[in-house]
Image: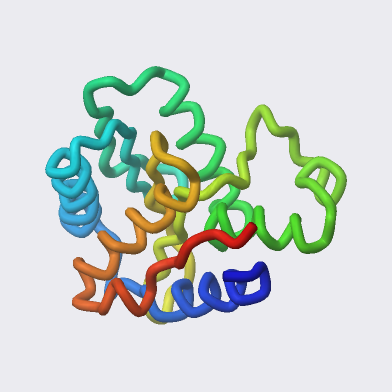
Length: 167
């Protein structure tokens, strides 16, 4: 999959994976769904579901470190700033041959454009939060979040999945 195809897939995911609402119950369902996927697969990661400004779900699985939680914070800051997935923002910057610091003055200490944070978009309200994981390679982090959202929303994950990264 090339860069332009990836960007089209990100846009389709963000357009189609929308929630009817975001409250504590939805956050719990989404967070526990990701946790179950991770534990069933023996994955080591941190999971965070938030409305902007309010953490609604957090889990750190065995084997994670405080660094994973720090990656979650930095990736979710990107979603809060751009209302796009952290991976989509990173790929867009790559396409433009720039960085967050060069293009927006945003320090890497507070923002990370690696995959794993996805906007929680509510129908008729817009982007109101994020779901973020950290612990896997960035494309796998992103796909895990998309898989959980697809399961929650009754969508076909195989149609939404990011394919293998092209060289």
